Amino acid sequence: MSELSGMNCLVTGGAGFVGSHLVDALVAEGHQVSVFDNLSTGKRYNIMRHGTKVEFIQGDIRDMSALAQACQGKDIVFHKAAIASVAESVRDPQSTYEVNILGTGNVFEAAGAAKVKHLVFASSAAVYGPMEYPECHEDTPLQPASQYGLSKLVGEQYGRFYAGFHNMQVTCLRYFNIYGARQSPSSDYAGVISLFIHNLLANKNLIVFGDGNQTRDFVNVADVVQANLKALANTGQYPFEILNIGSGQKRSLLALIEALRDLGFQRFDVEHRPDRRGDLRHSSSNINKAKKLLGFCPAVAFKDGLAEVVDYIRLQKESSMGSLQAGEPFVNDPDKACNA
Image 1 (cartoon, rainbow, N blue to C red):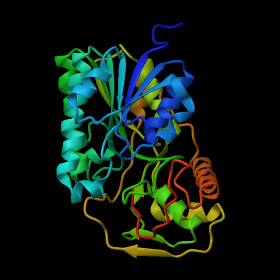
Image 2 (cartoon, helix red, strand yellow; image 1 turned 60 degrees about the horizontal axis):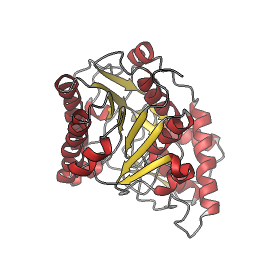
Image 3 (spheres, rainbow, N blue to C red; image 1 turned 45 degrees about the vertical axis):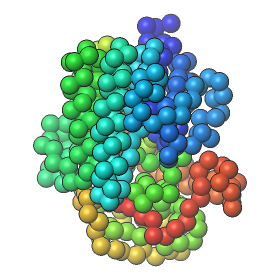
Image 4 (cartoon, rainbow, N blue to C red; image 1 turned 90 degrees about the vertical axis):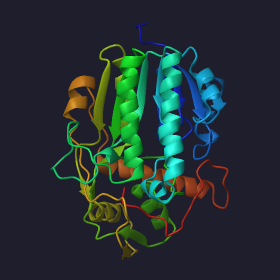
């Protein structure tokens, strides 16, 4: 058994979309896993399959005492808990700052005080802001266009500080547009792929903010989990790093819609509405640094990942019509749509 086998892991936001997929993978690799989640968007259902293999702690990252206790004895903390919405951050900056800035500061402080070896922070491509270059490199100038992007940039600065202050390894993963099973469509800034598919299965038209030519770098949640596992495997190898995690490819919303037509969705119209404040026109990642440092390599082909999400949502719809017991409520509100 290697030195990194059976690590004691804490996943904040571990009952959520990305966090629960990461929990699945950590359990499968034989690590000891604790989840810290306030269930504001996460669901116990997402991790219940693991039973007593996963310790669940219902708590809020704004509660320093609960967080400090949860960090005790942990080797690595994966910090996924956040208000992950550009639109929400524009509407209610205070709440975003309380969770993503104050709460994230608490996570770094608690982890450092508990002598955690490594903290992996879920950052975002939103730190880049409007693209002035063909693709985003980690050294691309940063100019967040929303309070959400600003909050994630502050989180990265926490990481740089605490890596030195507490001698704690910190890896900041700048996620691009994640999609996959378990992604909730219930917020107005949920993943556009999940929202589109839910609406199509409900025989609703699609809402696009803008002309649809805006581009996104869609990365499957399985590849995001792979990046986190690669970071874990590199515990002790560097003090602080910031890494782009995307597919390395960009697609327009119109191309996404055509891909959905190719999967059999034909009878729908697209309604265009005005651009929303804070939304980016283009987003594309350069992932060479993550490939070189971590050995990260996206493995899920877009058409396969898209088909998997369609199958998952269709199954959820069929098995939970009229019920919220399946862990992800089926929402078919046509006004809920987004560009990211």
